[in-house]
Structure formats: structure tokens, C-alpha cells
Length: 306
Image (cartoon, rainbow, N blue to C red):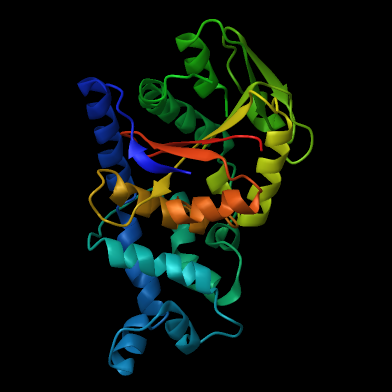
């Protein structure tokens, strides 16, 4: 695997400012994460556990002391602790419908399930699709600048075929997403399920899809998509967050916030570090891949058939 590296392509100052603003907005919109993470730690008595131990503890040691009716969810506890260790910032307000699941993090660690499932399951589809499409238009500018080869509602694909007029694209998604998708030139909307039949293509783009799923489902998804592309020329391009832990990267605070958001709202969903991506791709049987860092929340990962 090629090392994680910043693309040497020229990113305009305007694009950089837009992406920086997006990161700042994300940090402010999700500013409540830190304070509710602290609340969850207090409810789990983590400060008391560490204090009574007398010296630093591993996550497994902390989990062994958590008062729980069943075995604590150690991976979720580790993700909670990573956010607490990374950022001292906390504050804020948000829409009550989004805030409620955060109150259930400690319960989900004790009992299992996602906080979102524990709290409720509202009808967020239209609002979610609209917001994702708007965000996509901004992020795709950085992707197309930082990745020259070219490759929900089809907005990402529309930006690609606009930048590369010789290409035609298929927007492949579930019925509720495709039925609300806008028409775009040279883009065909196709209803389907990525766990079953995948339309054939030279290149397949998965934009912020893999982070929604746990490891086992990710392996199924990746193996299905790799079978749908040309064995000689095909590739799968993943656009998703790659976590870093040095605290020096511009978007790292927003990435850590989104990591806890994934734990709260998605069953198995998570943001992954480069090591975790490597492990996942290897488990799926892919050893030829390349991670490209761009000046955005997301990075680009190319994977190739064997």
C-alpha cells in the first residue's frame, strides 16, 4: 500500500476556504458532542474508576469496572474515550430530535444497540438527503482537484460527469433515495441493493458509504462491488474519512466528532484510522490499494482487483 500522502495537485484558495469553513461549521454544529461525551463518562463513573485505580488504565480495565447488567461494549467505550482524550472543548445546542440519542450513549454501552435505535427512529430521509447533497457539492470540488483520474441523490456523480464530459454514470441507491433524486445530464438513476446485484462499470465510487457499516457488512459490500468492475482496468474508489491521531491535521477535530456521531446513530458505523482501513481491506481480500489525502474531511482510497 502506498503511504498516506497529501496530493500535490493545486488546490485553489477558494476551495480551501470553503472546506475550512465547512470544518468550522461542523465543529460548531456538533459542539455538544464533547459535553455529552463527558456526561456519558460521568454516568459510567469513569472518572471515579480511574481515580480509585490510582494510575492510568486501559479501556479493557475500565470496562471491567463499569457497573453493567451484561458485558460492556468495549469497542464503543474505546471510541468514547478517544473523543474525550482528543478534545477538551465542549458546549452547545442543537435540534432536540438530533440531541436525544446522545443521552443514550451510556445505556448503549451497557445494553448494546445504537443510541439512535434506543431513542427513536424519526423520518429524517428528505432532510438528510438534502443536506448531504448540499455538502457533496462543496466536497466534490476538492475531490476533483485532488484526484485527476476521474471516475444519494446523484449529486456527487453529477459533479464528476460535469468535470469529465466523456463519461456516463449510474447513480445506484435504495428506492427512497432514487425516487427523490434530481435528474442530471448523463446520469442514470438505478434502484437496487448493494448487498445483492451491482450494475457493471469501469469504476465504482463509494462516497461516505463504508463508514455507515460494521466490518462484516463492509467486507460484503466491497467484495460485491469489486466483482462488478473490470478485472484488468477496473477500480473501486472510496471517499471516506481516514482518522489521524497526531492532532496536527486541520479537520481532525471534526473527524473525531463525526466518529462519535457514527457510533451514536449507526449500528456498526464508524470512522476508521489508516490502520483500521488496512485491516478492513485486507479482510475483504484487497492488498492493492492507495490512500490519497486531500484538503477535506474525507480522503480518497483506490482499491483494485487482484
